[in-house]
Length: 188
Image 1 (spheres, rainbow, N blue to C red):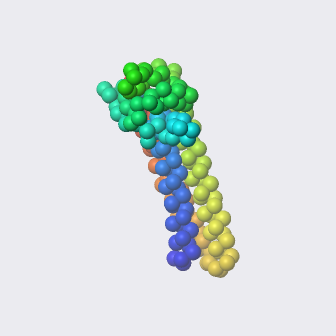
Image 2 (cartoon, helix red, strand yellow):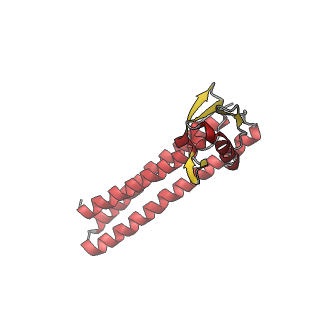
Image 3 (cartoon, helix red, strand yellow):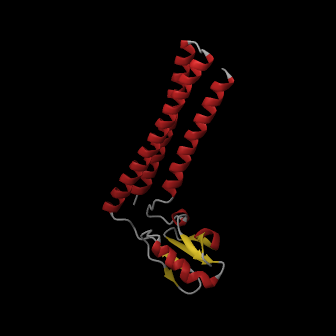
């Protein structure tokens, strides 16, 4: 295999890995009935005029599986953290006792679980589209290589099959992740 072909597959697989990693990050911020600190990843607190990620300003722990406890390193930021959580619209009302903030995760209703499961499928489908776009780009690059390096037709065909196998592999990984997240969301 020529150096250019190896590079093509290396970059293609790396991009597909990133698509799957993005999927897992998005799944981490989806509420599933259990307390998960990753839901706070998108919360930015106005800290002396600079938007600062909440998890950089406080310790976040899970208490009894259904409650997140946020203990700010600087107690004077408690009100700002509370405002940021409300503004982030994560669907949970913060309870402050002056020392820390508690986020109790109420059990999800059946309808809400089904809604979240639909969102999970949608995110999974978006990831599969990203993988298919990467496949298209790889195929286009292969055609360019065919012209520039005068690759034999059977080499091109073999590499197109390899690109499809790579696509199938990552599509299967995404399908598995979606199924696991759906199961997690639907479990009461």
